[in-house]
Length: 173
Image (cartoon, rainbow, N blue to C red; front, top):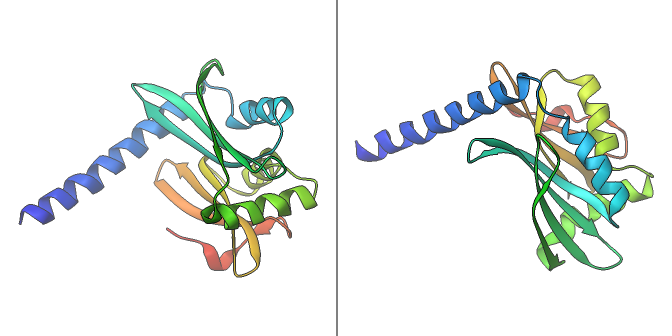
């Protein structure tokens, strides 16, 4: 009984968190994450491989991960969404666990694309707000796994980097 109740509370909590995030983003007081991405991409070497929008301490925060294949580094950034000010920056070395993400980043580079380019394309094909995007590679396909948030909640999609289209076999609800 206790496990069931804890499970129910966890599911309910994540649902409320999604509703709060949707309310905050849909109020329209924040620049699009792609605006911050463009600034980050132009100011730093590497390719953004991950993005997430979250509420931290009552404010909307954009988190990014950037891979620099030449320097073999991963840099994580956290920005206040409202004004684009940097909260935190952390640099680390690429590890063997990062190979799938690196393969996706290399595919973006090979095609002369950035994560902001890809998210702009996805936004045109999907209703809702992109609240999470992660570059990945599996079974020889480089794709971006996405979480889209709308009035009904979150849904997951995958977007093929090379062919620039949604992958229908990789849709989750």
